[in-house]
Length: 99
Image 1 (cartoon, helix red, strand yellow):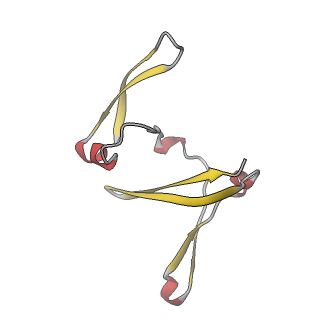
Image 2 (cartoon, helix red, strand yellow):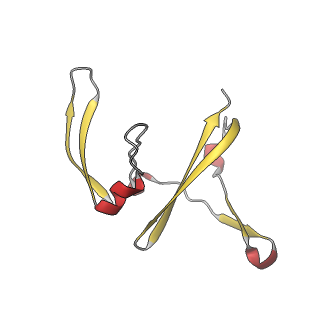
């Protein structure tokens, strides 16, 4: 988990943010320095469920909340990343919009 230690406006009206993260969080980036997105666990407000099917409920589905399904048209592959933290797991899905 990390925290923002400094933020300021640049001349181009972008926000320059200085972030402090622990070592494991930095390793989760896998050396990537482009296409970085910041998010906060506290910003997640919608609740959803996991559906389990099959023998011994071996197949699990993350359900997309109704509020997020509007205009959801996707194509191509879906990428997924799993981040294990103390006491919680974060799944990130990346998909291409059809539009």
